[in-house]
Image 1: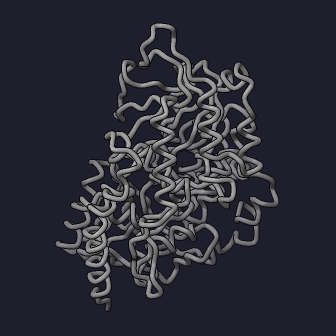
Image 2: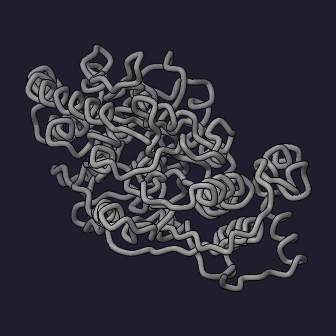
Image 3: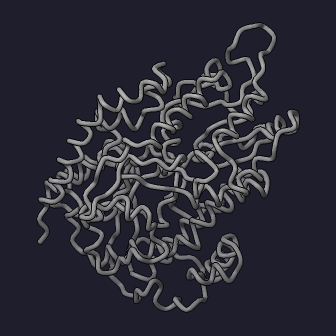
Length: 481
């Protein structure tokens, strides 16, 4: 076992500091911070000494995995200390050596899993995935261990995401799931506070709080600030109500408006659910949002050019849609911006929602010591509550990237409203469901508009339904010993 020993004084200080980051001491204590009733058996798991490695695989091209999940030492920043602390707590309690391989790209996850199952090797005990790529294939190829079969994983515990558990399970199997170990990667709306003041607009934070932050309200405010720079040509040099890259940033409106691609029948099988009145209304609103002249939509690339993009740092947009994982790019921008959730479809909608673009936890079916693996996964999830979660939310996001207390409050609302959908996760890259998942781009960006949604649905729905039915049949045919 590699030697990564902290003095008890340093470890205690780190625990105290990070527990304080998560909120008041009473709340942190309820979740198992240092010194509470779970000190001797955290998550009900007794101390032991397996003297075994626990290896984690993750694709290196995922921003979240490469920035916020792994470290070789405690380092000096809060996030590294939190990650290191979590590993020390699990390693010392179970006598394991946690190691990780961060390499390749998102497509390599399935290949890595296939190679392990084909050879029967127990190379990795936890594999972190993309949010879509390869997920359904790894299920139908029977490469995965069912989390329900872990004796020491209790997914009813508060550190497991219950919405994800329900949304991603199929016919009673849970091949992918999400706990507090997985930090959500979501999109958000950035608001230029200088333009709010200049045009005497309503306080969007208050709109969020009273439930009236809707797409109609957003478009009303956008219209108030859109201004030509005087040259008579509308281009990237003008001022707009919204600056937004295309692609998955627009897909998120589906979930923000409480629409799903997939539902479940009484047996837990997946069913197509995109053909309803709310989906039609969603398309109409996105059409208005993007095509009324108040939005500058540009092609999404990892390195957008100044000639095409219109980021919040330019100061010429009231609202911008951005990935939370990319906010570090704006740490030094001079534009005073705030953070908001995506708007609701209408005020009557119960909550503000957004889908997660973060990956899932999975385990290869070749795992040999399921007892050890289950305990490590449960403890990594359990200890994340008082280590990496508060470090990420309160410090990495809350203090470094959220510039005011209102934005910190909005972060809580955004992350409380994260949803998962099997339609996106399992079929988002299927050639037919993909056209529906990317409806905002396929119809509106390509110039067809909301009026074409009926024919768009008619074109792709039958084949998408057939894909879902075939998936259900394959999953139902899986025989477990």
